Amino acid sequence: MDKRSAHRISIIIPVYAGERTLPTLIEEIAPLTEIQTTRDGNSFTVCEVLLVHDCGPDRSDTAIEALSARYSFVLPIWLSKNYGQHAATLAGMASATGDWVVTIDEDGQQNPADIGKMLDCAIKSSLQLVYAQPSNPPPHGWLRNLLSRSAKEVSTRLLGNRAIGRFNSFRLVSGEISRTLAAYCGNGVYLDVGLFWIVGRIGHCPVRLRDEQGRPSGYSYLKLLRHFWNLVLTTGTRPLRLITILGAFSMLLAIGIAAYAIYAKSTGQVPVRGWTSLVIVVSFFSGSILMALGVIAEYLAVTMGIVMGKPLYVVSSRPTRPAINR
Image (cartoon, rainbow, N blue to C red; front, side, top):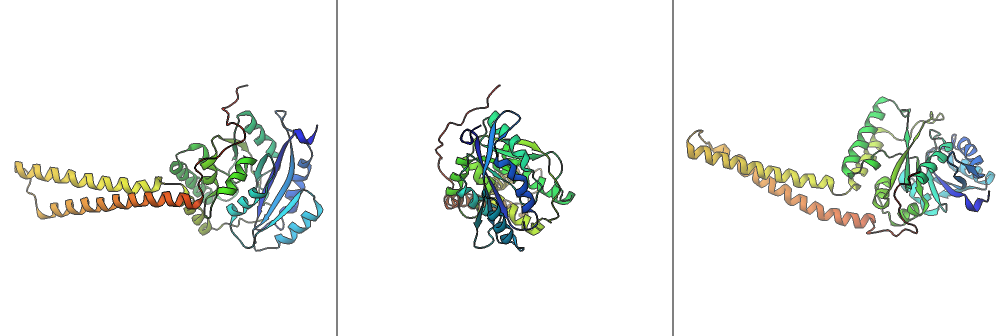
């Protein structure tokens, strides 16, 4: 089969501490540079592997240099300092040339052989973005897995879209979408939130995670907390609207207490003491302040969306089609 008729896939690997794991991972990817046929009969080939060096603590740079000298499909991208996984992934997306882009971690948990399954999911259901959905618990311990599930559930509610809530660093995304996102996305944007801005059809593909290849995670609990807070800050105006809702509830509570106090005073059922008026005043004006802050926060959110690079629209070269029934 001609390589020109196969789906060209670019693989992006953000590298932080991959000195020991990268050689094995690239060896697994190497056979995929020849034309592969998926279970559903779709043909694909890995046209390039972009190793984005994120200036970690080990000598990943020498490993990347050795791999790029050995394999013609390995292309290094050198960042000037450590910018974080999402920034490194976006840097790779900006340079990717494939019809599809796959993002994968360096630690070997995610199996490159699952790319064909994810491609089948994307083509079968006409999806622009496919997340790997682990069928087994990640090998991080029960506490970290619990916190990860909780954070993703919160993000699901904040974004108002259950499809993107189960996001994963193992993704298959349209190459056009990924390059557009890399062009628009500003500083501090959570990658999956940025994808949510411009992706209309999202799906999930079940995969099985493997054990890490002797490399501990580079994320401490403090880093994960900062990661989650960045997600909350970039999700949009939903968290800010809670301030306005809380203020409105406080004002309604004050009005309710005032109505009850006037009724009780006029009927003589309950003696109304001085603290009642104090509660009413404090509740009403604190509610007014919260509502004012909520309105101001909404304006700031609009400004933040502009600064982060959220596009008004994105033009695609092909239509976004509904799911294909076979």
